[in-house]
Image (tube, rainbow, N blue to C red; front, side, top):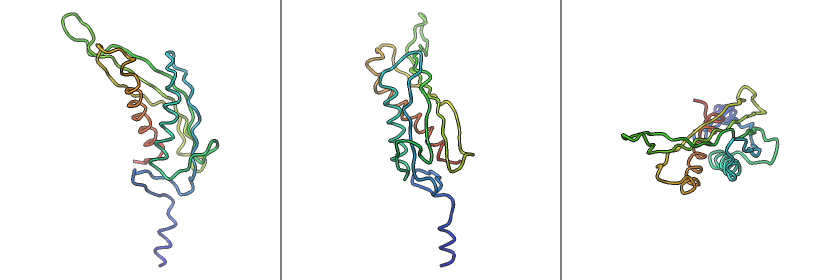
Amino acid sequence: MLAAGFLCSCKFSLSFSGASISPDVKTFSVASFPNRAPVFQPSLSYEFTNGLQDKIQSQSRLKLVRNNGDVSFEGEITDYSTRDVAISGADNLASQTRLSITIRVKYTNQKDTKQNFDQSFSRYADFPTSKNLSEVENELIKNIVDQITEDIFNKAFINW
């Protein structure tokens, strides 16, 4: 019985996602991430902010609060750009175009300030040059946002 009481006083908890979150941390907040990229994509701020909230809610026990969570995320979208890649053939034409997104994130942990970070996260996805960006943009944004939110979640909550 004494051993069971000792085990319950641990300072971390594990979830199925592999997250290691202190039991002292009960809430999180995500501020809206304004789009400050030179090329403005109207829905990206909404997609990213909601994507990060959804990721944390589905992968942790933390409760979303509007402001001042035990842990908080804020920042901005700093890049949204395309460029030709995969130059091939005798005519030196690109066969692929790359959509890149970069998001700067400031993470604040009110319970353990050693966990705080301010870092940029970037991901990209390629698509055939034969397609117009508008044809594939929504799917690419969703995939890139999923990857970036995974990276942010891992940085904030998975202590490898």
